[in-house]
Image 1 (tube, rainbow, N blue to C red):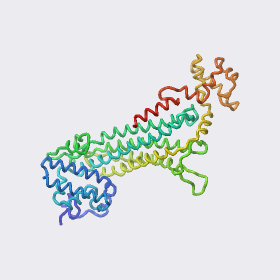
Image 2: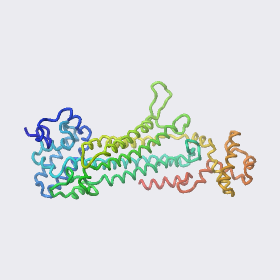
Image 3: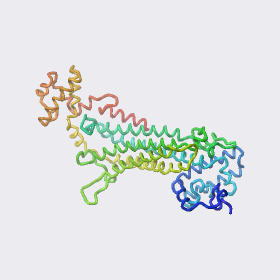
Image 4: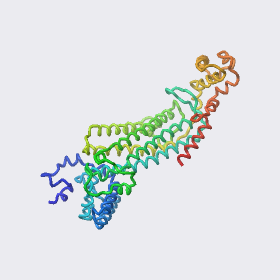
Length: 463
């Protein structure tokens, strides 16, 4: 029996008994790596065309390979392709079907390469596409946030530190903080892409090959920025997968922070926003409940993606050079991290566009906690007091306001002047929420004029 008829394995003739069914199931990856079929075919086409250009295979073989791979792609796209567990992975499944279709030409395709450099190439091609999709989704989420920020560039809300009311800000300014976070995520993804976009193909199993390959030709055909320069590193490197998962984890952390605020803002104790019904669920027992399940689940999924990062780090930490079977375990966490981030970004872009803001509740909350106390201190500094003295003076004023159960702006001028004679009628401009916002008219500040300027800058950047 021809070994390829039995299992289509290059090593079958060496073994005296077939692989056990249990081991087949345990070691097979086709159940999850078949999603890389397009990358596998693209890489094979580029490799075959290079082999023909280098006179390693004939033009007739190339034509047969191209025709056969086109049919394989059509079968996969239409759902007619039969994935076989005994063929272990996407590479052997595609190659076996190609050989069925075109005969010996299909067997020549693997000349000058190994599954080690082939899978490394496939992962990079697949991940490059995912990064490009995620970059588009990060831009879309930023635009959605900008739309909401633009509507609320003047809407007052309390800014918090330690979850205590600190100083007034605008809701638009608060949302722009997340725009900054997601822009950093986009920058990280773009940086990771540079290291993803390198070609391992041609490194073969670990030492390169004796065939006269033109690796630069293949890299150019696949739109890659260059080749991996060391054959050992080319087949064993998974830094790019770890880097991507780290960047994905950070993006999910930003989503999680936003989620936590959405959950708080939607609660009855805050009442700042309403999330559209299509993004919430009810309770099986309490008919009055509307639960922010999307935001809560995104918080939970953040731990999942961060867990994949830890898993990949542990996967690589003890591996000697070069390729080891351990590396089969890189795909499922990488795939799931990309899927989770992609789906989360997509749903958050839509959800943020459906948020309704209760501006009155936000402003009332900003009046609690003496949010303009720092403004009174700044007012006294401008009157000539050292800041530390002004800080102590305002603390006494706040104590008096607390004892009378009023805001600082509600204390009579005669009372305020007891704390310092330099206080005049103009103090009430400083103590108002609007006065506090307008006073922070510096780059990066919360003044509505600055918020609108930042929105315009971001829109131009994203256009």
